[in-house]
Image (tube, rainbow, N blue to C red):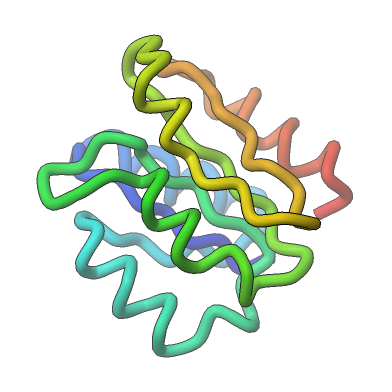
Length: 122
């Protein structure tokens, strides 16, 4: 499974990538929203999931979801939130007819992230 990982914390991003590799996934790491936009524009058709931090230094993961999810049928989106922020969660644009993202509070165990992937049949 090819999974885009968008996380600005170097240690957490590396930890997620290594964990998913050990489970025979193909993680694609990005440290910023700009890098994620480039990766998605270059080829999002082969992604089965996106795990994205909601709060990145160069933008909001919820905006990334709203901008790209319409062209990514069947792709699971998991948005990681470092703190319960109802206003930020309200800003998640939910395109009509598309499944909403999973919004998961950080910290989240890697085992739980993997369970979300497995539960979605990925």
